[in-house]
Length: 155
Image (cartoon, rainbow, N blue to C red; front, side, top):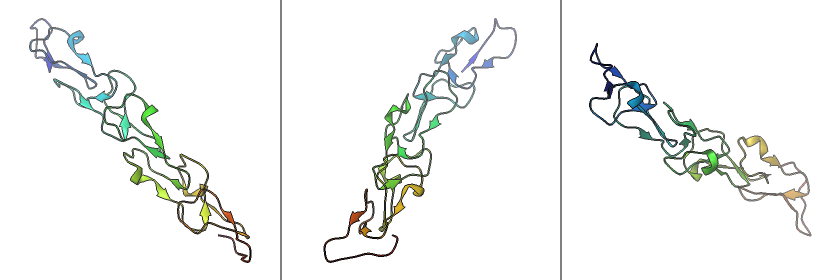
């Protein structure tokens, strides 16, 4: 929404990150900053937008939301802090920023394991050493081979 400075010229739009819900705003001070958890990328708007799931905006007056970091996800829309970030469980990883569900957590393949929560790379999925095995995907640890069995390969 524009504001008019004393009727002296064409109305000026409220800048990005701010809005004006009133008609006839006389000064830029009437342009209200968007609250944390909200943003407004365009100038001249009458409201702010809610940050979508997978992002957050920690400050007032922002024109964009920050993506949640890799290694996890943010399910809540309108987040004002990255404290809503949930780490991927051990045995999985997420290499992408801005994820909004646990479905973004990719599993470590069978033959590898990762005890780390919140991993952002498949590099944390370490191959099992000889004498151990991770028969299932998403393993946290490599288990020793049972009595009467052996495994002499890596992975």
